[in-house]
Length: 593
Image 1 (cartoon, rainbow, N blue to C red):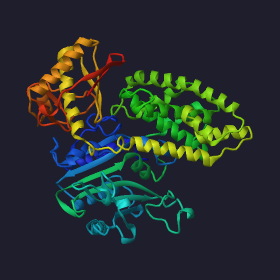
Image 2 (image 1 turned 90 degrees about the horizontal axis):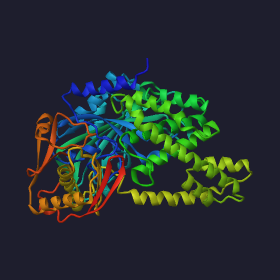
Image 3 (image 1 turned 135 degrees about the vertical axis):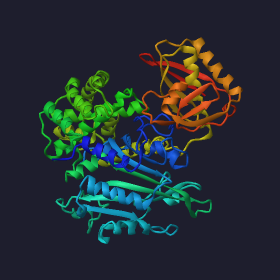
Image 4 (image 1 turned 180 degrees about the vertical axis):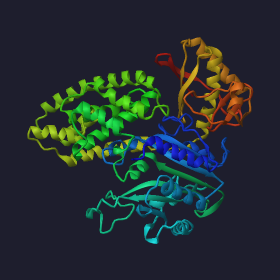
């Protein structure tokens, strides 16, 4: 009987609990204490402060299963392995165990718990550079675990090195990093594709191998002269994709044929009258299933479609769903027809990320956006009908303005006897990608690498602002999120009472008074039960462990938090609330600088 996601989740949790690991609870898809990124894109993202030396409330041996969204993978979805939403199963050692224990435990989990056949597993280790020695220690550990030398592959820093800045040469002085060791599963029934070279190897793209886990060993610090020295406290950072481990446990490289997708795909098949067979149908159904899962997850944490930031990506996902359904079904989809698939998603993750009643929140948002876009879709089709001699730029403009993918436009124009200048389209598309890359380079790398002095000040202001809102407006105030740049702080909150302009001025005065009072800022690691008795504020969507870090701004503010803070409010400087607006039902947004 195939392994299910429910069973795998339990196996992973039990495995690390038996080895004295504590859960570091997963954070929401929209991180609250990381101004450098729009979304949570990896399991280690919320762990960066602790990998850099801060004490973790749960100790130095941790695990979790972190839901992730990688917006940069949207265009990759459609093959058998890429998804925008995935769950990263992770474990960490913060200066406790290292390579010997980590590699042995992961091998044991794969071969004894998940029961993967050893003969289908390959591993990779760091080959070294001129400045850095090859990771012979990991090589020898794998051999002692029974992996034959011909199944251990050595790769350079482009494949088997991790730091927040990338390759060793890119790392700034003081930055930690280290070699990593990956495990791959071989699908023996898939022959090597000759177009990928003379020989096949684990990092080949022919589809015969699938990476299922990566153990990063934070071992070095870069010195000011460009050399590297060993860190006194070495960390392990492991991540393995649940979807991929499920797929290999079934000896099938298609993650969409696991229990995490089967019921969603069945619902899409039913509404489209198409089956999940043949690459043309498969690609479209995979995109619809993945994007609907991600969209439902984002809507459930109050992201709404818009033309910027998180809302832009949600809108893009929903529009792609609409276009792919049009291609699959031959007619525009009725938004309500997607709801059975949404209910299937809720059922898959029930009591993990969703409850049954969440459909009441998700359904209206999907229906409104899909119905609105269906009209836009028709307008785009009308424009296509009027094009006499289509240029690559016109096709790209349709892609940009209406969400028409290249293949749909090409197909529709081909019916009229036209061919598209692909090179011109690709030139425009590449310009668009480069622009997107440039504008988002600081927003998607994750972690806390770019916390400037100003963003740290603004982050501390969120604590003062949260408490001042509560004091002035009332007990119904609840933080809904924040976004911080070097130029301003944006803070969203819920309140049953609409704040008046006078109250906003009063809140601004309270914050500046607290800054003038030169209040010390510090933290304590205490039990969750004790913090609740103290009345510490929290971000209501976070799942907190038994031991938590609470930041105190004197006796004024007490709040659960892992983010960076100033040591004294006097460091902040004068604050101005320069904009206030309503953004939804009982939802408000303030901007400060």
